[in-house]
Amino acid sequence: QVQLVESGGGLVQTGGSLRLSCAASGRTLTTYTMAWFRQAPGKEREFVAAIGRSGVSTYYADSVEGRFTISRDNTKNTMQLQMNSLKPEDTAVYYCAARSRTGVLVTTFDYVDWGQGTQVTVSS
Image 1 (cartoon, one colour):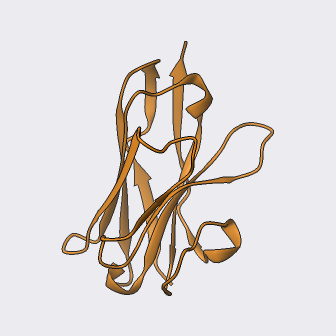
Image 2 (cartoon, rainbow, N blue to C red):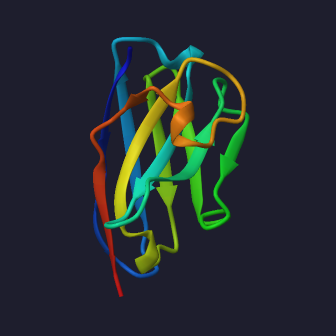
């Protein structure tokens, strides 16, 4: 099992940017597919972006494609989410997730290890 801790959330105006980070401990991340999910009040947790073990393969939800960029640094056991052109509908708690397998993992059921979440609020 890997422990995940998110950071970097906060309050930003529409059109602004934030950079989220996910730090892992307990295991090296080189064998893990990783992802970001988010959950807005009253809504189900939804997929945002995922990145393969080497960082070459990336996947995005249509709602964030072109605005968000997922990346990872296996030497530092970290993952990042650069969020640009933020919109009020991006407001949510953002979660880091990891799973020790390959493939296109884009649902909550695909992931075993989760962080505690970090709040992102975009004001209009």
